[in-house]
Length: 240
Image 1: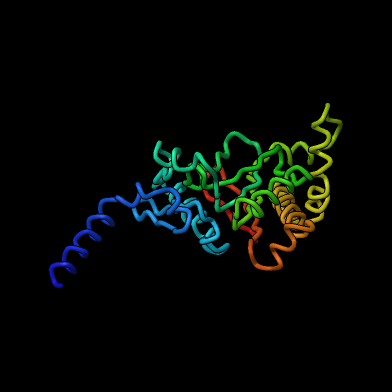
Image 2: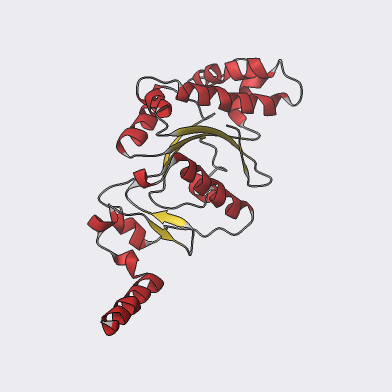
């Protein structure tokens, strides 16, 4: 009996210490959550195992690693790519500005299949964006929604400047204008205030969207959080 126990203990040690679990059958992975201590990432196709609070913590920790030059670049290899070929379960959905200086997987130190991303100039929430969010939370089981702006946003600056803008850019300005109008009544840096107000107004727009998102928020299935990315520090300041 002692020999059997010792053999079992040895096999368990070899499996867990060698990373053998990374090769586990994909069908089994669907039912369990594996934490890779090396890169502090979650390799899973079962996003429901992660709570909204845990999802936010993962993003905060990843951004902290990036900002401090200690990125782990998790889930960015061929093994990860192949494991997700039959489906995706991103733990977070992020609505971000299209600005090329805000690469989301990089600033949050995440990898393939971790983030469901919706981008447009000015991180605007329209029907298309809401549809994408609804898809992420209802069918992909994402647990947190981030509305992410960034400092020195050109779309917000253009709206603040005023005047006529060409083509469909006018539609962007139209969506951002309420945030600019509110920011003009505040003290301090008007552009910074407008960027913040734009994020907060869009967070509210997401939270109150019916019928799907509002219900998920009410049942505490998801969280909606705003954030602003800083070019100088690489940090995301979470607002709500």
